[in-house]
Amino acid sequence: MTPDRFGLYVHIPFCVRKCPYCDFNTFAVEREAVRTFLDALRRELELLRDRFAPPPFDTLFIGGGTPTVLSGSQLSDVIGWVRDTVGLQPDAEVTVEANPGSVTVKGLRAMEASGVTRVSLGVQSLSDELLQRIGRNHTVRDVLVSVEQIREAGIPSVNFDLMYGLPGQTRREWIDTLTGAIALSPDHLSCYSLIIEEGTPFADLHREGRLDLPHEDDEAWMYEETLRMCEQAGYEHYEISNFARPGHQCRHNLIYWRNDEWLGAGPGSHSSWQGQRHWNVRGLAEYAAAVRRGVLPIEGREELTADERMDDTMMLGLRLTAGVSLTAFRRRFDRDLLAVYGSTVERLRGLGLVEIEDDHLRLTPRGRLLGNRVIAELLR
Ligand code: SF4
Image: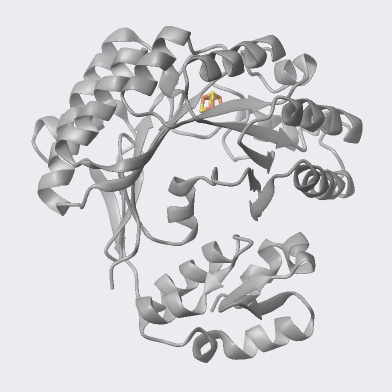
């Protein structure tokens, strides 16, 4: 059984400088490295086409890193290569991640002309003091200017990435950021709490007790206020951390949450294709060397069993407010969801944490507050 939607993720592995909490696969931007990377990416797309023969993609997500360290015309070239080699559906959603202050109207117009439908802006906070504390190199003013520019260029959908649970952040500051963000009227909001990732400077500071993180009660309060404020402002809460105006849900991320199929290109990118996961080498030099030899730069792969794929479908799908479709589950796995997970579902139903409605199993509002803890109960 083939899934309904196919996505392509392209990883642009460059940033102007590394943020101290980030463990993404990024390198300092440097002209020669960018050229080498773009040559390799073009070739990798051809190799992906030859190996997997994917149907035209429904979504393209250009993420990073900071994709907008590339010029508008370089990004347009990347989209053109995707269209010409692996193919995009005529109504494809094409997202580019951008950092505030890293875009120009000219670059954005070039992106719009090449089919970009959505810009995801890494706003993070609307407090200059906090932005500085978390090592971002943009200001609140950059956010305001970038939003104007994106709209002027005619790009139809804008997402803001925001973070809460930041060092020294108070409840008041988060409310101010969220209020300011909503006032700018983005079409979509992603609100994630800061995660301390091993191997980052923030992890060292945290170990040394030098990171003044909000208490977990404050963080839970911030999350609950986020739900209340976003819903009151007309955003649909469609995934644990994501909110959208009607018609602006992120179709690419829905592919991940519905456990459909996607291919990744670029160093360190991951793919999930026909029951197999694989991931690329992270280093730029190894990546470029592999594609120069005419082989996909795959570092590792794993075959998933049917049970693992079912568990993944549950784990990801329950993040969605709509939940997991019982019919789609049966179509995909030829098994009844309740025959596989029935006793746990009954127990969680009894506790008021999940419900079955309109052919979907989903978390109740109470279950959503406990989120991952409830989902973990269902995994075998
Ligand atoms: S800009 Fe984004 S990807 Fe780049 S280092 Fe900062 S958080 Fe990581």
